[in-house]
Length: 506
Image (spheres, rainbow, N blue to C red):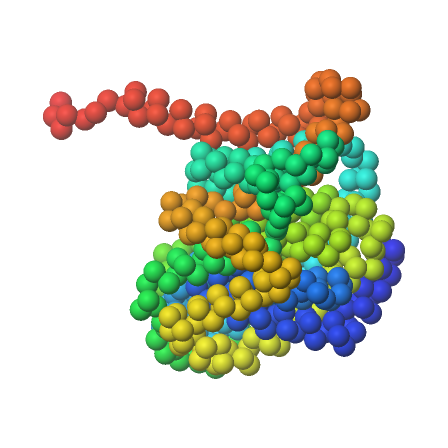
């Protein structure tokens, strides 16, 4: 414990340096600005702003990206409360009660309690992250290639089964992502594969154009379908919280923090299930559940703390195992790798300063968000009055210029256009995008683990069954993959065995 504390203090020393504070402030500001635009949640915001960090020092880049991540979490809340238009599903539950509070003239109270709940949930879970990261890292260092292969398989299965509304659609996008991950030069044979003679693809499909296309351009195209989209004027009351508000919110924040962190560390879950579970929990525990939907402050405090706690929880498997806990964290992982940083247990040994600076900057980012958002809410509201038809072309132009500046490659611009169309079509057809990003990041790691495992066993696949941890991970993957199928078969059999009522009485 004392070792963790001393390392964390060292991280604070780096995070509180003036240049890193400036980057953290800029990240929080930009993240809130982009994250509050409906449709452009954390994934799109990081994708759009990723080119800014490409030429930066790795420590400054990861501090800024993490701040963008946190800023987006609160940016969603502003539009959810004021206009009943959540940017992503994570803020949808906040909109239920928060917008009703706004209609009652208590928008300031809703936004203030949301900021405080986010701060508390984020701060507590960062503390937990700092305490348990090293023990988990020690466990991860005992993993060999078979264990990592099985863990990645389990993570991808969880993403498909828990993070997708349709298993079939999730599997299709996962396979598509794995195909993309195979493009480039074979790591063992050294021969090009799936490049179709394109020199630009020898190093694989560039990560940034894919991310910007799928999440940035795809979202912009979808939102531009309705050119009349713009926000009406909103009136924000004083940002004050009464003693009764604090008394009712405190237990909800505590429960939301615990629920959010536990859900966030499971790959494939993310902030949406965490916010939903927190809202349902508060409604069930309430003495007046019938009043939910009329502006109950617990319905804002709980989901907001769960939202931020889950966002931090998703970082735990990334830092300790090298496995991203959500699609947004997968993009962060790609940004780290772009800067030559490979997340995982060795990161704590080889780049200890950067890891603890990142963890400390999460504390700092939460404080900056609390200070930044409360007084700046009127300014955010004025920006939201700009019509989509003016706002999104500016964002699109900024995105294209930023992406082109990375490699000065017209081929990358073509990739952005292609994947922008793919992202748009997939949204229209309700195909999940997260499995593509997860497999694009984890695919090469999974292939490497598989090949090294087979080299260890001289081609004997039973190596995955003879090692207890590996067999356990794979068994869990099979269970999670089969459970929805079994449930579907049982529902069909139940419907088939239920006699159709003829409407006659005995």
